[in-house]
Image 1 (cartoon, one colour):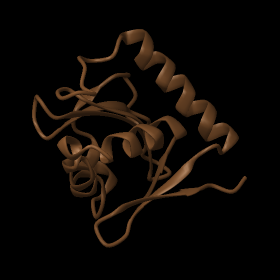
Image 2 (cartoon, one colour; image 1 turned 45 degrees about the vertical axis):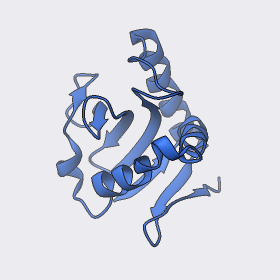
Image 3 (cartoon, helix red, strand yellow; image 1 turned 120 degrees about the vertical axis):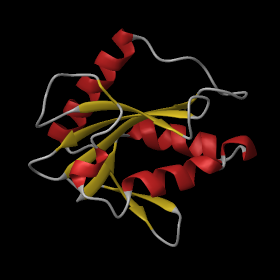
Length: 134
């Protein structure tokens, strides 16, 4: 299984990780996504009706924690992290609009097509991003 992300996810993650109040996000992402089978990741709120390519909103760290949006391509065993936001704290806010979710879905599909992605890895309990080569 390979984990990818779009630039918006990477930028938001790097912004959040700099704040002490959001330092748990790195561990939350590692614990949820790494060393799992793809079928174990189909939890959360499914934002589309697809069984083969579900677009999911996942709560990390409970109701006041973080919201993470991602696309699963089950047949290819690929995950595409699209967006992340905290619910509380100085950078926190309520859920994003349906229009924003739709734009994120379109954006991730465009990035997959153009290969404008980062590979996400876990090295020594750190989330690392590597730019995909076209």
